[in-house]
Amino acid sequence: LRFLSLLFLLIAIGKPQKIDPQSKVSVDGIDIMMVVDASASMLQIFDDPSDKRPRFAIAQKEAISFIEKRTHDQVGLVLFGLYAVLRCPLTLDRTMVKKLIQNIEPGEYGVDFHQGTSLADALLVAARRMQRSQSQSKVIIVLTDGMPTDQQRLPEVLPILKKFGIKLYAIAIGNPEGAYAQTPYGIMPVHEAGVNMQLLEQVTDFVGGKAFSAHNAAELEKIYNTIDELETTEFESYVYQKYYEIGMPFVWTAFGLCMSELVATVWWMVL
Image 1: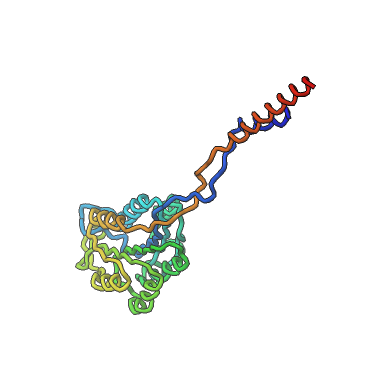
Image 2: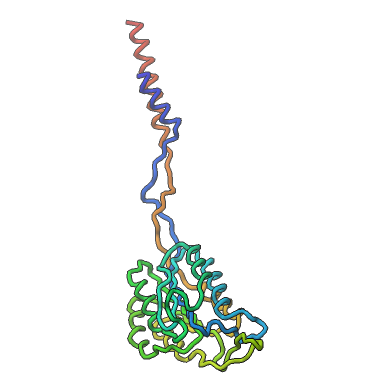
């Protein structure tokens, strides 16, 4: 009895705990695919000649700032030009996604980004990666500065997004009337086809979402802040953080054994 009582006391001193396997915590989160135009025109500067940063550099900065705010969301990355490539599948590792965005250079990864703007392909690549998503809220955010060169494919791609329940936000950057580029003679205006805002509005209206237009860095930041206010989906995630102290039963058991030994000893002495 003395050995058993000592054993139970040692167990109690160790503060044994019981984990509640059913404990849950509510988390707000959505799945977001960032779809970024990496064509050569993204190396031009915004409409503001006083800001000499390329569009792509500004887009990188604002995309990273946006991702930093999405603490409970899965984020993925698709780049597109002539072709569309998946750069990162949906992940909770925001640090990795931010590093990938920081290291993007138009024309990387063996894909010729300089010859087109394959928006439909990019949307399809992003949608396929979200097809099996368990999230009740799925969002694609497209950032582009050009006219889609595969516009004829949009009617077959958009119903897929709608079928998967994906909301689409499109951000057009630049000015349809022209842009500026860094040349050996300084910053000079250049002619470009620009973005067809009417088309983007029709696309987002069909799928569900909204089209935005940004002509400078401040407007782009404001747009990302607006998108950051998206409604999130509340879901329950199992977390093992509820613990129950179970040491007292061992203390009482040890006490009972000690008392039993004491009673047995006294009884033996009386006899």
